[in-house]
Length: 147
Image (cartoon, rainbow, N blue to C red; front, side):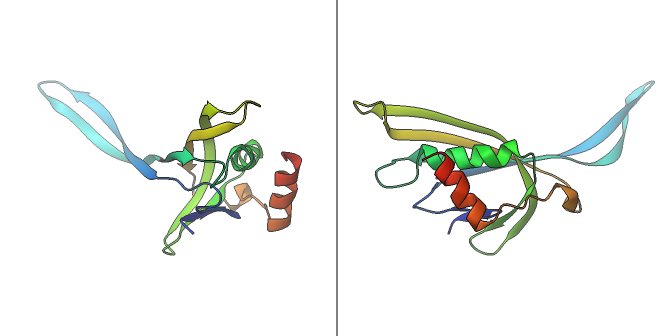
C-alpha cells in the first residue's frame, strides 16, 4: 500500500502514483508604514495542497474505473483521512481535481496508457462533519456502477 484516502487504497493494482508533490502556505497580513517596510502579522495556516501524479497502464494497473471512483468520492464533497503506507497520518483532505490524459488508444478507444493528476486540499482536522463515510462495500458498488 502506498497510501489510503478513506477506504480508497493507492497501490500497484489500483492507482500507483509515481510522484507526490505538496505545497504548504501560511498567511501574513501586511500593513503599510511610512518610511519603513510593511509590518506583518501572522494570521495562521493557508492552503495545503497535495498532488499525486503518475501513469496508469490499464493492462497491469488500475485505469478509468479507479479514477471514476475518485471522481465519485470528490462529488460527495466530503473530507477523507489520508494515511501513508508507512503509517504517517496527514489529516483530512478533500479531492479538488482529477485530471487524466489517455493515449496509446486501442481499436475500441480503450486507453493503453493514462496519465493522471489528483489534487487534494487539506481541511481542518477537527471538521469531522465533513468526514466521508465510504465503506468497502460502497466502494464496490461505485466500481460496479462504472463497470
